[in-house]
Image (spheres, one colour):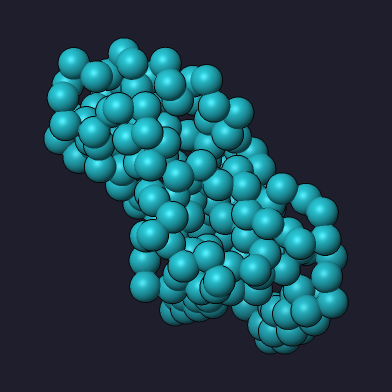
Length: 188
């Protein structure tokens, strides 16, 4: 039997809460298309590549809840380069802000002080050394920095304020942390 894979952008899910009119209209269109395939007798599976959570401080302004990791550590006297794997050309979706970061330290002797500084921030869910991150997440040690940092459910990480254009993210919904691991899988 032939297999057909269809993919859509996740722009709507990044920009709108699940119960907003624009999102509901989008889902109605997807539902109609899936229904048409089902009516033709197709076996249809639907899933997502990641979960999604709102990453704002709340209130009517929906201001993003961001920890600029590279700046935060630099202000603590710890020279570093923070890498956010979520960075892609579609920054209008999430402003290249995500819930996972890996931190390369200029001085490996700064690991303990960087962990202490990050653990003290309310936006940090978990900070791990390279070896602990590799063990917990099964990551290749040669592809990550000295630290891996995971954000809390309703926050994201950035590098520095200058690196991110926050004008393109009026309402931030993003992913990459442990709170976005639940992903639906539906089959008719």
